[in-house]
Length: 145
Image (cartoon, rainbow, N blue to C red):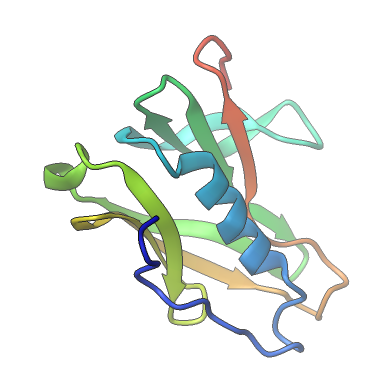
């Protein structure tokens, strides 16, 4: 097992109720042990409250796709603002997902370093009255978002 590259971040109890660590863990569960084939923005992705919304889709080497849907509820939100895919490292198997800068920089990493970097904007809004955190869905290769 590879030692994590990024130490676990701890957020102030007034800033987060565990939602951001749960989102990070969900992404890690979905991608560890796989290779990234592609990343696409502004793709229709499943939504738990309606048919679809726009999000980001990470296609993995096993044919599965990981959909990250932004969330927003009043003054609380989580959104993927930008990503950087390191194409020279996509042949390496993902070993973890870490965060820095208060969960605003996400690092999907392999043994050779970051494969994918995500810039994330987020706020819990009026603490814990509204929903935030990514909605993450793993789609089998035959499922369309």
